[in-house]
Image (cartoon, rainbow, N blue to C red; front, top):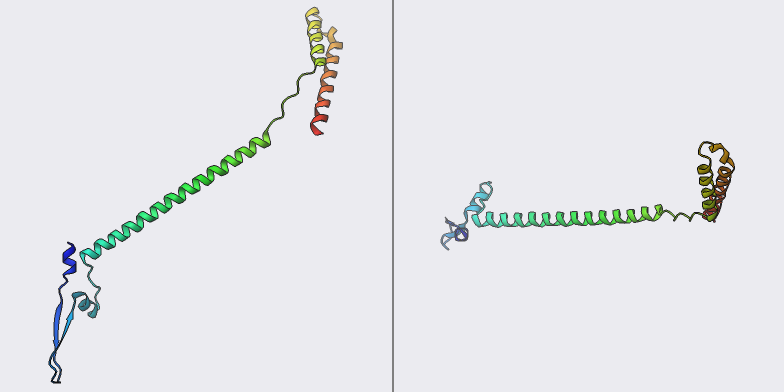
Length: 149
């Protein structure tokens, strides 16, 4: 196959001149004759194969470039996503809840004891309820004052 393209047939044309120097010999390839006639030159088998090889190599190179671009794009998106997630976590980080004050625990135990000692008369525990509410309100105010400072 490779040999056929290197052994192109040539056409010999002789031109006679009026001078005494003799005939002039001109050799032309079939592709040259085709081009003189205005036709497209014929591609040789080797030329077609090399053209196919060039096209295949270019397609492979482009596919590899596209694959690399896609990987870079995905890597960049993953990095952006991780950075955004870290930012969200940092912004949404909840401050630890303060410990319940001993005063509230004492008031709560007093209220529970009152309810247990007066199972049918829960309204008798209004003083303990008010004390607990006041202690919780004081703790909330302290929390917000400390959080804003």
